[in-house]
View 1 (cartoon, protein in one colour):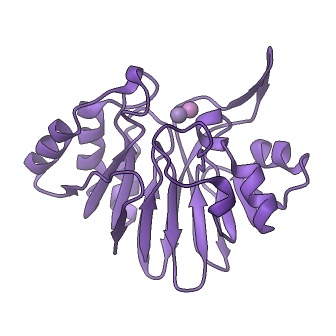
View 2 (cartoon, helix red, strand yellow):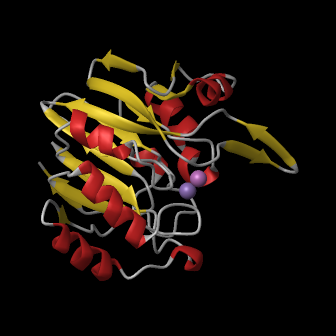
View 3 (cartoon, protein in one colour):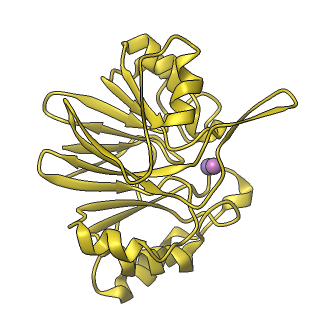
Length: 228
Ligand code: NI
Ligand code: MN
C-alpha cells in the first residue's frame, strides 16, 4: 500500500484493488501538484467541512462516482450536490469494499462558509483505517486529547498522520505528546507550511519524535509517497 501526500492534509491511499483519498483540497492548495480531474478513486473521506479539507471532495466524488464518507451532517450537506454519500459518527466503524473505517473524535470545528453564511456540518472527526492488514490513523484537524492514549492502546498503528501547524491544530510539542500516546511505527506530519500562519520547522518535530524512542517521523514533500 502506498500513501501519497498531496500537501496540507490530503493523502491518497493506493491499495491493490482501490484508491481512496482523504481531505482532497487540491485547487488553490499551494502545495498540491495534482489536479482534481487527475484523481481516480472509489472513495473520498472527509474529516470536516472547512474548505482546506472538503476542498474538491464533491467534484472528485462526482467525477469518479465514488462514495463520499464523512460525519453524518457533512455527508448530508454533500448529498445535496448529487454525490453518493455514507454518513457515520464518532465511535462508529463500518466495513467498506476497500477496508474498515472508524471515526474518532477531533477537537476542532466543522462548517462550510458560503458568502456570509456559516453552515455548520456537525462534529469534525479523524479516521482509523484498517486496510490490507495495516492500520492508518488520520487525525484530521485536532488539538491534543487524552483519549489518544486509548487509540494507542487499542490499535497497533502503522502510520499516524498528525497535524503540527499550530494555531488551528496541535503544534509541534503537542503533536510529540500525541506520538507518545499513539506510539505509531511511523508518523507523517501534515497541516503545516501551507500558509504563513502555520509555518513550522519540521526538522524540530523529527528530532523531538526521535527522543520518544517509539516512532519515526517521516515528513513527505507534496507528490511523494510512503510505502508500507
Ligand atoms: Ni479545519
Ligand atoms: Mn484545516
